Image (cartoon, rainbow, N blue to C red; front, side):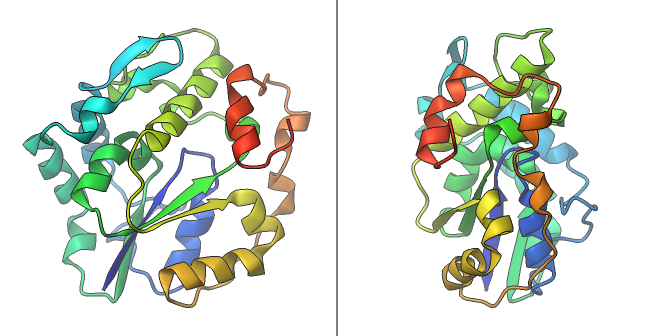
Length: 239
């Protein structure tokens, strides 16, 4: 049996991977919404608050996640995650998994609880990622310490930065692959070939929409922030 999860901020295109897995006979939980999320998600939201209490805010867009990698995991966190994943963990399907963008907010402890599962890190141009609203735009809802702001686009960008930083600060699990949404859309066959080799299973082909790429260029909101620069360079996006 294999267990799979998708890590990536909301609006990074993770639903495309969730739908691909579902159509490839991967059991994604007892109740999955149209976005491919395992729901209800209340227990994961509470787990986010439990873990976030141990994140130290250094001011601005800087956080210290070091304690999360060595401290004991709060038993309440474990209970919440296991309860949320009950239908997945109890299933006897050959391939099982789940997708919920907020899993990214608790990735350090998820990686420690499930060190051997197969992780798919889903990446998208951050400027497209913040073109629309997402529940994690206000990180206060999840207990994350940050400099709150009335600037909606800045809050979206800060949320994006936090979720990128928490992933990059976490030791890479044994099974890990990074996939860009843009490659999945524009080079689907080659990207699926990579994923099939990684997951050791055939994958379904789903319809893709090239128009989802570069939306920030015509967005009326400001989608460009200086602190995107490192990520743009790291993943090969145009500056």
